[in-house]
Length: 432
Image 1 (cartoon, helix red, strand yellow):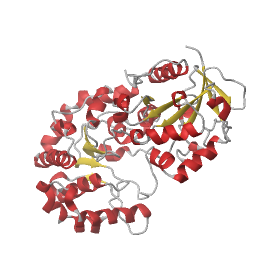
Image 2 (image 1 turned 120 degrees about the horizontal axis):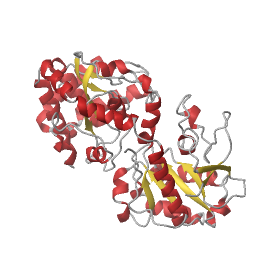
Image 3 (image 1 turned 120 degrees about the vertical axis):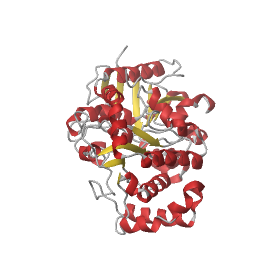
């Protein structure tokens, strides 16, 4: 394929190109890791030869894409006056004439959360219509798998599934020394590991169950809850609200969990490795907690939404040899399987993944945890060891996958888009 020209506004102090909204993601979000926006991630870190980088002041208009990273959700950018005004100011810095005549195509990248573009398609179209930018000259890379699945019903839209955290599993692989290097055969004190930072209702319910059954599960779980930090105060307010409005707790478990709320609050924050819950340590790895626990309940970002989203919360246990169950939106386990990973129906009843009723899906998740709580540590240890082949396979899917594979697929999507070909039914092959 021909090289694609990727535009940027200016270089940062390390000579990495900054994307057009001007945020330096390397410093603002990712510390010292050079894995920021797609220009950093795909085209710099891995040095792929299919990309030319150009400052947008260069007169280069053939096979050209200008990326715009949308860190905030479409409700902000296109559903509020503040967001729209901010976007207008951003576009004043861009080669607007080239975008209007289609010489440069616009790539909106929102790969960090499962945001629902289908609710804002009309607003998005109106915004770009007012800028005289044709909608068919815009492509969206969204981490929302549900939107990708149903894109044809949204209206004509150039959209493909592009999840930052799936791509980031490759950079996790580069830091493989931070993870367990083999399966530890020794017995472990904790049946379940559950990591929670941002307070969300489904995480609260799971944490209440784990705390209530701490003697039979001996869980290892984190949860903020101090009265000083912002995220701690939000957590305490969430539990208080849940106590007063427990309608989201499955009736089967309602009384026991409601009666547990005050006892759990008295023990918060629950700290495993880091007490600074206001900071997102998604790229920090403590292998000891994985070494001390058997199974992982992945409390994903989304549960009550229709969107399907996966993140580092899944890939960390995979890289640390842990069987997992996912507390997430319906269909999330199906997505994981479609990427090539093995799941664990021999350990968990995975029928929960097909249940659209949120309360009933939560009930089935808690039923799974109840079954685990009834098993002895000897049984748990044997079940874990029996899973070794799957654990090794899942980890190797990340560590041995060819980086060029998804990147070339993404470039092919860009090339089809630039040349006016349909990108329907396209999805990068992230793993072999």
